[in-house]
Image (cartoon, rainbow, N blue to C red; front, side, top):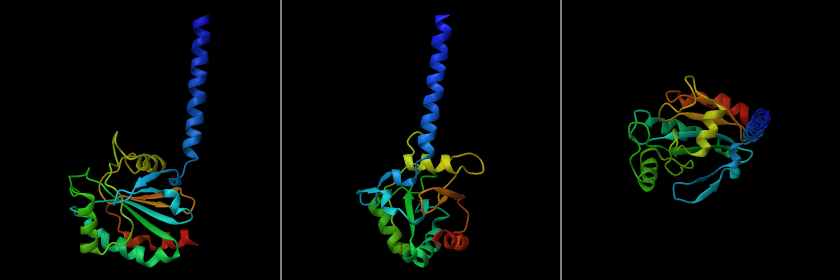
Length: 185
């Protein structure tokens, strides 16, 4: 009898704890995360409160690398109205981001005149995935599960810091104008 009561108490506590953790997790926003920028400085994503964001895992040696150009065009078009693109280099897909942060920054500047913020190279999948990406992929899973499938996966974030839509790597950033426009209103 004592074993049954202990088991019931254990199950209740476990269920109650999981409910509280899930509730706390669902109340999070991207503003609860800290990242390092491409220069190694800590950045609280709360610095972007009230802005519409596009978070993208990027790579310099990928067939999709030319997407830097339309991403920069979006940034230039909407930045003054409260839009930011946050680029997170990642080397998990075909080793297509092998460079150092300095090399990545120089490449993006020279080849595509990128002026949107770039951050420290991170993992977006697996045990070592950055907590921001664990949050994003849980909040907006892809077509075939939560994992990021390749470079240039895009997450659109509303002004409240909530991920609202995910776009797979081949999605053309030039098709985001209307969605960004609507979120900026």
